[in-house]
Length: 180
Image 1 (spheres, rainbow, N blue to C red):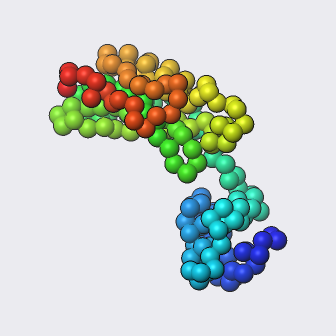
Image 2: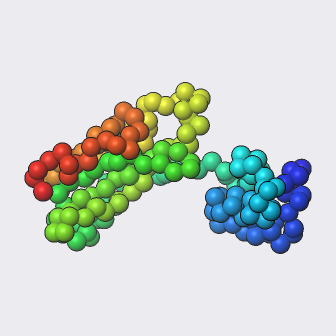
């Protein structure tokens, strides 16, 4: 590896960073590299991300997240059946992290009112925004299809307030209905 940042790290630090990468702890690896340097001479965040991405490649790992596997209705039905309380709705919600947007599929139950994450649906990183491959958002399409089918299985409403674009502030099912 030709990076001066990597070359400046002690062997023990390089080993610790590689160990974090092998566990797919990308952010922890970035933090470990930056913290190995004195405060005034820490490498820039993006330069450090470049080093971590290169280490991923050299260690034979993929830096970009893999899409989640397609959801299986039978497995989701079993998950919902195992939940405490009565299922009152199935909801799809946008969320995001350092890799980009994804959709959570949630079962809402009563007594007490609780949310249960059934699955996370991700079909790529936010690089898709820059190369023009979204919209449509395939994770939203999958969430809509499987969410509706799951809701039908339990004869409950399905709610996805923002299927066309990511939106943290989209209205939630419990706030749009007075049935619970």
